[in-house]
Amino acid sequence: MGILVANGCSFTYGDEMKGSRNPEGFHCDTHHHATYVAKLAELMGVPYKNLAMNGSSNEKIFRRTMHFIQTTKKDIDLLVVQWSSLGRFEIVEEQDWEHDVWVQKECNANQVHLGIKMGSVETGPRFVWEIGNKNPRNLILKHFSEEVLTVSTMVLKTLSYMNIIQHVCDIMNIRVIQHHANGVANSIVLRSMRNQHTPEYSKQIASYIKGLPRTSRIGLGKYETLWDLSNRKYGIYPCGHPKEEAHEDFAKLLYNVVIPDIPIKGKQGELEA
Amino acid sequence: MTYLVTNGCSFVWGDELEGFDNDPPSHHHLTFSHLLSKKLDVPLVNLASCGASNYKIFRDTTDFLRQTKKGLPSHMVILWSAWQRDEVPEAKSVDFDNGVEIQRWQSMTQVSPSRLASLDGPIAEVLDIYYDYMDVGRLGMIRTLNYMNHLQWLCDQLGIKLIQGAFHKRMMLNLLNACKPKYTKNDDYTWAPWVQYIQDSLGSLKPTSRIGLGSGWPDLYHLSKTKYTIKPFGHPDEDAQVEYADMLYDIFQNEFDK
Image 1 (cartoon, rainbow over the protein chains, first blue to last red):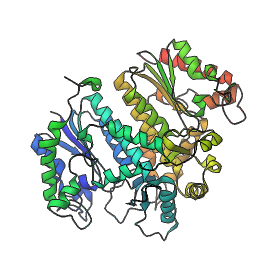
Image 2: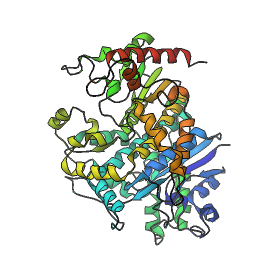
Image 3: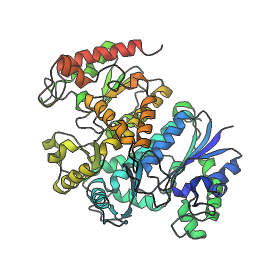
Image 4: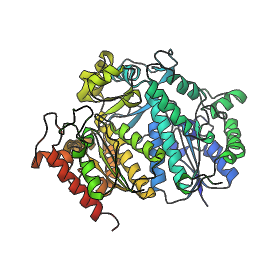
């Protein structure tokens, strides 16, 4: 029997759900059975492995997902990758700057969290700094993210990672679902393509979007995201995470609607008749 | 289909080889890629471009494998570039691209601590400070080793014979320096988890995926520096390209299908 593997950020980890944020540490959290990953595995009748960690950037999600696929001895029946905010990126530092927030640590990689303001059509979307900027590190990261990195870089990276995962799953005959945390991702991607001075960039983004089946575009114009579903029906937890009931609904959406929509592929990505 | 794909930065494109600055460039027959394809008796697709960051090399290689209509290649050689390079999108004119002599595919500028002078004022100023403060070398090592492991695994799955490694001996020196024991002994903060991750990632690579990274085979720069000459802007010469092609050919002949 194959397993269900999922990765993502706090939305997939299940942050703020009852039983999470245990003062003794993440290993004492007891909310796991209530996440959409556990619910979906239950519907499918398969074991699951949830790789998600709070605060993950898309670079971290890609890195850890690929490492798991490459090293696991288990058959993967379904891979669910939830992509995080396009305003996050990864840096490595000796010092742990995330010690006072609920973020799991790994290989000295700190995840930088930024909000995104939409910007003008001329400049494209830009990051907006949401963390106090009194120390030099934060100030440097603020200027770096605004003047150099810009959200357009993360859009390109994320979409290329999505295409790579799609390709790998097609080769390995693994069913895959990819979804964004929030429907805002679609607006950000579209806006990044509207800068008239970067036509080649826009063409590349369009090509990446075109390379994905609808079942890997949840939140990119297809279906409803976990956050939007929760916001519409149940509200949102204080720190911005989807409610437990939304996890249950989202698992049903994936099981009843999205999974039957997954294109059936054979080895080497050839579409079966 | 039987053909060879190569990718990398200027070392693979063949910068400074005789004829490189002709319009169009006429040096391609002197590159190790071309020479290797002749020895293997297979056609060549050389994806390399000057100044390429490792993310661009990874993106272009995986895009190619996913989108090619030629069928999958039989052989592939990837020379990874400096750890600290990256790419960001910028709106620039065609004149700018020509002036810098590093083409900007997909409107992406390849940025590096050694190329700040060619960037716009605000970007250069911010990057100058950023490079002083942030450890872009260690970040690049995590990313690049992840890309290398991915390509090794992908090529194994697809039945492609892959050789990959470092373009320059500095890469191995950077790696060794960053992993020194002194960095894991700080009581307050430590690089120990990072070092462990790097050692595991490097350990997952086969010798044929570690050319110039402790496998015993030299990188292209070191070969040129020790046996031949280095061009004025730091690139290997024509003779080094010949010997490097011979070395890669021997690896393809002797290290695969064992």
